[in-house]
Length: 205
Image 1 (cartoon, rainbow, N blue to C red):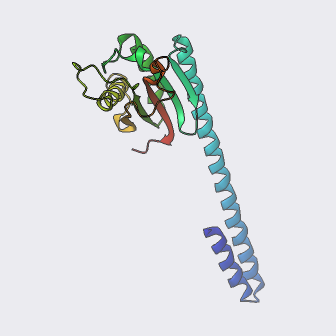
Image 2 (cartoon, rainbow, N blue to C red):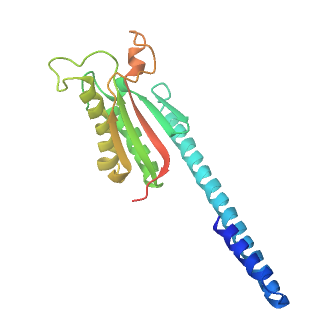
Image 3 (cartoon, rainbow, N blue to C red):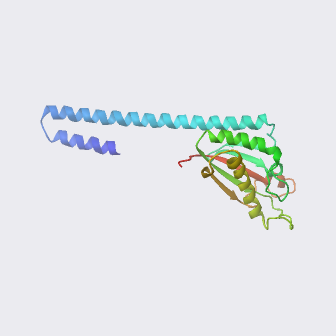
């Protein structure tokens, strides 16, 4: 828009005078402005392509990490409009009614943290439960608290132990209210999950 206004202004100036030299100078100014705009647009497109390639490469690395850990049955990785989405089955991550991360899952999370440290993307962590209420004798009065505590537990591992900047994270608990499947006994284990979304939005802090 600025370039168009500049071009229009230069043309008006050129047309208002019969001076040949001024007209030539005006034309050169237009060419220079348009050339700069073209270079800027090309650079922006190259930067966008490079950023997308970097994001896709990270997605491939995460998928390979899952395969190397033989976790493909409990960690599903998809690249969506939201970003790289890791759907981690809650039954493997946590014991029933607990928000303590199982030690056997720690190596995967720490390797994931090393990948995240190299790139600037924001990370959203979302906890989900099934529709069964927490144990009455447990620490959480409802699935809201339990799902939020589980999301926060994953953030703690990735930041405190993994060393990723905490400012890049958000943690949210959705309780049982965003199931992937109908709440049947067969589907409840699939609805118990934590999703880690590596957002396409870069961290600007």
